[in-house]
Length: 326
Ligand code: ATP
Image: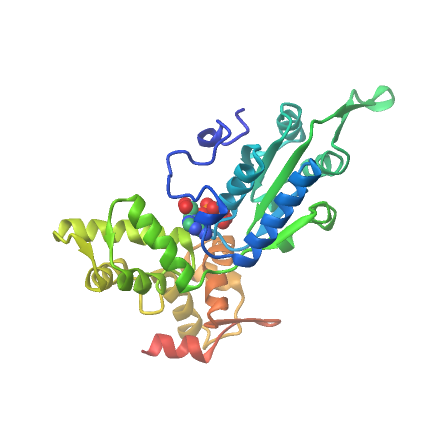
């Protein structure tokens, strides 16, 4: 159990966070992914078979974990949650798999960070529902085969390209989650506001939806801070004025970029004349981990066209330059 993340040990996903949608109807956005998953879950139920292993990939905070919970709920499975970095040794994964019960989803977040010797154990577990355990060493070593009950792995990753081909190929269902449209984010914000007993005006929700980097997690975080500003300034209803004031105080600009996003662009413009420049150099200048820039900040800047990824390095686009100049 120590391997399963402590706060998620009771087979549930963040029970304290009631903002997470529990079913497909409460989950706006990612329409294509949801429609496909509805078909796959229904087909698995009709066949009376376990759902195929699923891989969800896309930038952080877009709802991969939430979707895993929804799939579990839809299938009537229990869910155990763990993550790549906490499974350090092969024995850790064997322990998890050996204790897995029938009709369980094992959700592995950041699956690209599984060490390769751990990954290899997953191959036979996923394909043959079997654990091959090597007992002893040298000439006396022997393999004991251990059958596993029907189970399903849902892997989530921000870096699909970092997953080895043999592991990736074992996921029968692979779905990419993309940034959300303002319309979907408005629905998410209105739902969150209702859960938090806040009066959020439609116009204000739409305004906020255009400033949260297409990401539900950021939308909900900003909404919580905006509620603080509204409360302290005695506003009962959250209108565009409150949203604008709070976003300004939070350093979120007209395109939804945060201070770090703008620093990323400024370094490219001021120190590297717009590039090309390597991510290592930008990370060193910003005093930030390269992986954080790559996973958290860069995808949205590339998605919006402020940064271009070229074979020679990152380039600041005209759009990026204009945004900094305005
Ligand atoms: P990470 O890659 O960092 O693990 P993730 O992709 O797994 O992130 P989640 O943890 O599922 O993202 O979602 C982040 C937050 O955004 C959750 O609290 C959830 O409530 C909310 N959220 C995500 N997608 C949706 C959605 N479609 N509708 C409503 N809320 C959502």
